[in-house]
Length: 251
Length: 251
Image 1 (cartoon, each protein chain N blue to C red):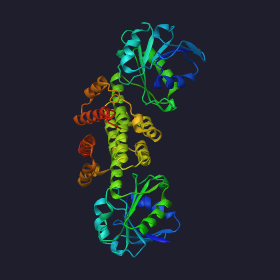
Image 2 (image 1 turned 90 degrees about the vertical axis):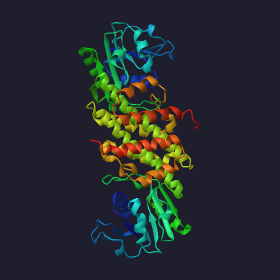
Image 3 (image 1 turned 180 degrees about the vertical axis):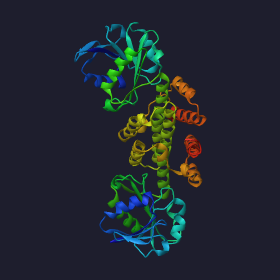
Image 4 (image 1 turned 135 degrees about the vertical axis):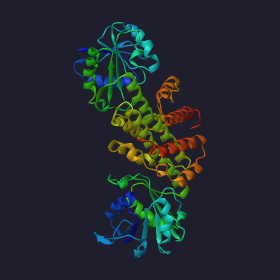
């Protein structure tokens, strides 16, 4: 039985807890979050502060990036500490020699259940023995587990920003364009789904269409002429230029 | 029985044909495309040239935007002509007084079947009687039909460029970032699907996350530092700035 203390109980922490709860051989014994009062529920002790924690085999840190370091400094120096950030290196855990990372490449929402089995997990540890521990755990959580160093993980998270944060911002801009004509955003739902589903089947380079891809300057000019927002114009110009230049580069 | 000649037999034309084939009271009697030899299959006459067409009740034009006008000039002046473009106004059909538009807001791929019932259709016609004809047809094809003028349709198509062409380009850029570290693009599939599915449930403004949204300048700087491509840097900067400024504006 591997005992686990879960530190941080936001979106990721809660989803991790749900995924860990169903595993045999692993037991979340303590959950630590400033919002938690000291009490025991379903055999788990909830604690408001890290200095109330009693020793466990693995400390799983699911807090915001900018407090990982300070949280790690409050934990025992001989403990195995694992953070869950895509952007932070293994070395952000400075004091403990037994460091690890378990990074789930997904965006978590409070009220949406996730199937952890489908989420790619990337692991890293400061020694082979701890990497094996993480690998065993990760394989029980997900069907897709890959050891990856901090540099690769950071690149992956950057890719995630593009396909999640930036894509969602384009959804926002499109919603605003439609709202100008009293058109509801859900008219775009089928196109949004088709666009996403298509790149599950074919390479995004093959899936590219549209006026910029066709170098259809008349339509591009006409689109720019109806964009009243300067920022939207800039986005339209830059992305159209980038699409137009994309095929010319070596890919 | 409304007889239809389908002009243009690319991705859209073929999907339209499949959707029309199952309707009672409507019959595609002729299909015209330069790539077609003169022959009859399943009761449909295929023709290579518009001047071989015999009169029908409705001419459905599914050709590229820049040839709609020239195709329409080759057709009878008293005929009812309907084009299928989001970007072109009703008036692009210059000679005929009976003009119409039937615009499906979707991206069509050759080998992917579509459920036309789910695709929003936007219709426009130069007189009420023809609008009724189009409305009847459109309602049989799709569960979501809306009359919309050329200006509104153009805005909608512009929104479609954002959530389809631009989003797909971001997928391309993310694929390239991963490839730099020999990471396969399909690692991003679950995140891509979650991002798309989330805005089917909640407003994209509510769904926005990430470093730019949090105004996390450290992560933004770190991301920019690993981007080696100047164009990718520009896209990252502009979209991050736009996300950061978005909440400050009145929305």
